[in-house]
Length: 321
Image (cartoon, rainbow, N blue to C red):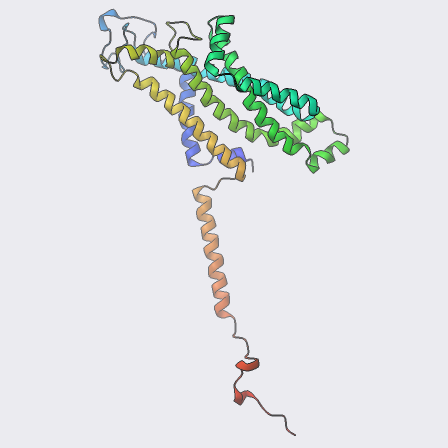
């Protein structure tokens, strides 16, 4: 059975999927279901408390916090997805092909990857935005370039262990092309590892996107984002100490669900099929039944005849002369 499909049956993974499904729906339709315009200002209700008209209150410009939170989900989440997609494209394909680069090509590729891994995310994104312009796509492109070494190393490590497998060598002897072998034999085995890396990279990307938008990088105000809402709320903690909680909780729940899902997928990839509560109970019942059957067979078995010194003296019948 597919380890990815089996891992997703774990109750903890289902809970993480439920959280991520809600976040995805908010990212796609949050702007449509927002009760008011997230950019509309109401100067008569600046820093308003939560109430019937504004469920989460208003910010320092009188804008509805709930509407801005729903509308900002799309920018925050989709930006992280864009960065991870760029990273996967730049890392997975070269990682698969690197097993055939040769020693010189592999050495150059690994040194280039090591150079990218030494660069800090935030500083590189700031430099890219300064060169390419303060736009979200430019920042996500820079973030994707910095995340690509993670996909490259993970994919290469998984592919190296499969490249010299006996079934791969047999396929080569049968005349199969290298592209067909990578697509059929190697990619399917590498896919679970890539899925785990993708979940971790999405969590990292979301945190980085929130950090960049917190600093005002990659997004132009007044566009709402989770990080931008956190930055604007910190200046008015004396009036609204609860204001940073909604965006902070959304960030924590989303990142926690992604990391939890990645851990479950990693366990399923290592064991092949994580044991659920039902399978553990079934295994315990089978073990108990086997133990009971063995005990019953032991009790019903006849006692062996005494031999050697255990035989009694009157059992010995002397041979007539």
